[in-house]
Amino acid sequence: MKTEQKANYPLMEKYFARKTVALTGGTGFLGHGLIEKLLRCCPDVRKIILLIRSKRNSNPEERLEALTKSSAFDTLREINPKFAEKLSFVSCNLEADELGLAQKDQEMLQDEVDIFVHGAATLKFNEHLRLSFEINTKCVRKVLQLCKKMTHLQSVVHISTAYAYCNQEGTDEKFYDCGVDYNDLESSLRWMSDDVVTKVTPDLIGKRPNTYTLTKALAEDLIRRESGSLPICICRPSMIIPAIQEPSPGWCNNVYGPTAFVVAYQKGFMKAMMADLDIICDLIPLDYVVNGVLAAAMKTGTDFMDERRERKSSTGSESDSDFFTDGVDSEKDFAPCPLDDAKRIIPIYTFNTGTQNPLVLHEIQAGLDHWLKEFPSKPIRLPSLSYHDNELSYKINVLLHQTIPFHVMDAISGIMNKKQRMVTINKKLQAGMEVMRFFFTTSFRFGNENALNLLNCLHPDDKVTYNYDARQFDWLNYMKCYVVGTQKYILKEDNHSEHKKVIKRLKALNTFLNTSAVVGTLGLATSTGLTSTLFDMATYVWDTVGAVLV
Image 1 (cartoon, rainbow, N blue to C red):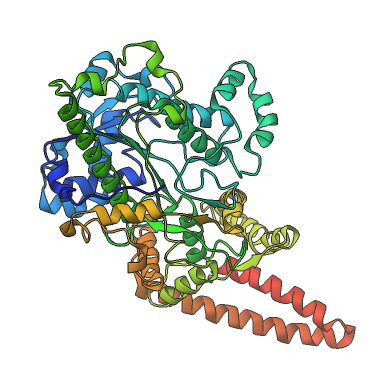
Image 2 (cartoon, rainbow, N blue to C red):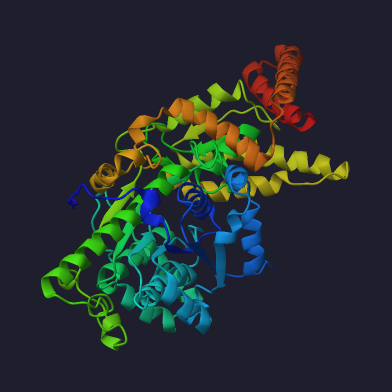
């Protein structure tokens, strides 16, 4: 779907000035980036309201306070120590009716919000279908109903995923048939038990790998059919990884997706991986997604206001209410609206790198190895990795090089009254591999023409500040951000000179043990004739013992 370009799009700073932005998912990885960028680059934004739910014994007020202390705001804190004054919150519950919002909070949002960004979702890929549907799909209807009552709303942005239709060979920036009707699924979930839902889930997801991608696709279909005249757009990022530049190079605050494996590789935890070395890994830095989402919000809002002005000019109407609300108090306004009858075309923007600047999987390890020589982590074992396209081969290597050594290491830790954590780490790695193997063994083709056109719509002065052109950065240089960022923000490690000493000791110990294995085995093998077999066994034992000793 091509988008018509105009020459009169405003500066981003000017567009967001004196506007109130509401945000779900604001305490998450992408949410941090959006809030930081808005407050730093659009200092005249009136207010940012976060819809926050209680979580893990923390109430919304505590979660907002924790957010303001995040390292994501270190640069902003130097520029404006009082930046938190523009942040506020309302307590919500994504699974409850009307999002669990108090009446006074609903009225405040309806009266004040100009821009609404919906980024909340459950990111657990293999979440039970009932909960995934509740949060990722049904919640979107509640957001639409809330937005339809907002009197000053100019723009709504829904954060989806580039992998919503990963069951297809390629995805362009348009709607597709989900294969499942969300209304039918919603009706079925009302009477099906959790066990029954679990049994039918494989048939429902079909060629998709998980419930996350299915429910995100269903959410898009819901928007297509129920958004009516809302000024809404959909953003589809690929896999989001640490920032390339903002809020600081390498910034991240979680180990979702590929970042978990990057950390595990640096530490020497992961030794085997189910993957195709020749696939394109479509990764995109956090700040590129942030820039794209804010640009989409600006363009959607500007186009909507232009449409409203044109309509007022042609009708001579002095009131906006009849055009915007379209009678939202009527029950029929919340009924599904077929695409052909929709009042507005819903633009879709795919933010990715694989289309213009593809990164092949084997280049990731090469880049990591390149920078780990200069900026090593403190490894438990020397980083090394074998790749497998055969499940049996993968499981054997995991057993020999992860499971057995980690059990031995934990056993020794127990004897020494130290924390036993290696078996737990190994289980998490294997679970993560099971979830991500689809994405590490499959290449995807994403069309992103709309996103490129959106970039061209930016005011010339904004094209650097809000850049997300994947052609303008080098993957090898980015890998430095990935290595240093995960060490600084996830592992809390930065003493590279000391880590180099640890690696030197590990290499020396491995050399000594392997040499001992050769010498010891040769003597025994000479009399038994089992040179090759005994040598392989001894080398494995010594490698395992060496990992434990270090």
